[in-house]
Image 1: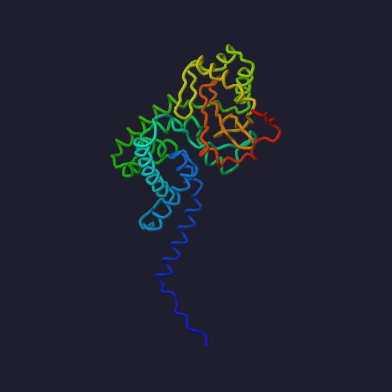
Image 2: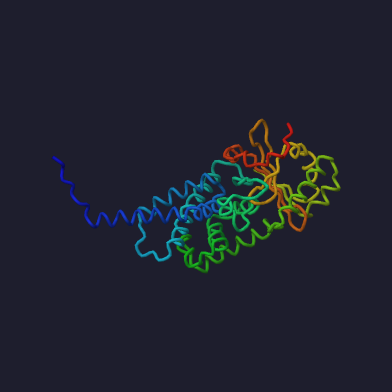
Amino acid sequence: MREYEFPTPASEQSEQKASQFLAEQFETHRSHLRAVAYRMLGSLSEADDALQEAWLKVGRSGTSGVENLGGWLTTVVGRVCLDMLRTRRARIRHEEPLGVRMPEPVVSSTNGLDPEQEVLLADSVGLALLVVLETLTPAERLAFVLHDLFAVPYEEIAPVVGRTPTAARQLASRARRRVQSGAPAPDTDLARQREVVDAFLAAAREGDFDALVAILAPDAVVRTAGVVVRGAEGVAAGAQAGARLGKAGRPALVNGVAGIVVVDKGRPVRVLAFTVVHDRIAAIDIVSEPELLAGLDLTVLDESAPLEER
């Protein structure tokens, strides 16, 4: 005899539909939300963790009274990232040495970005910008990222950082000044960027100090974990000493700008991103931490690019 199945109460059906709708909307906005989290955290793995935490919060709170779902989800992710940044900052202050903290790079073929990477790196989110964002306070970073990169009104940012809209505006303004001075907008012509970078690498291999200085902006900077070198002559001297990097490097786009990936025995060991401004190299950002390079997919690199042994 078939057991009788009690019908699902209407209220439970309504909750199931609401949960399904929310899940669908979260997936619809996932690429956008991941882009927000990457700009906030500078790490793809941490960005994914932030989205998971945000989804749990969304599931618990529901969307009752929410008019702009996309905007609301953006602020939820922003709040989660803010908490993660504050935790990270406290840990660094007590456990880790001070210095430049490098972000996780996004590497693609010189032929261009795939659609997912285009969303992730929209608005010229180069490695240089992410490095400068690491120098901001968590609240400054959130205000700048949400307002300047995603057009979230200060009125919606204010409750996330626990400030007034006027104070949130001031946070973004301070961050904007730091970004403008430390991460100038790169030239948009990728082919020309590559020409400048290739000329720089050739001069380094040949040991041509004068040519290196000529290709560098007077206030050029090299940034890597814990080390910052400023000034064209200092950068040129370092490039001469590290000329072998260019020999082992494979051309790539690194966060949307010209760069190289240095490979040793099939593993990425360094990623260099070059910020080219007015046909001169203004910044070189070097990522060498194994944990930041472990997720790189070398198959996206140009097969035709020669790879020499170091």
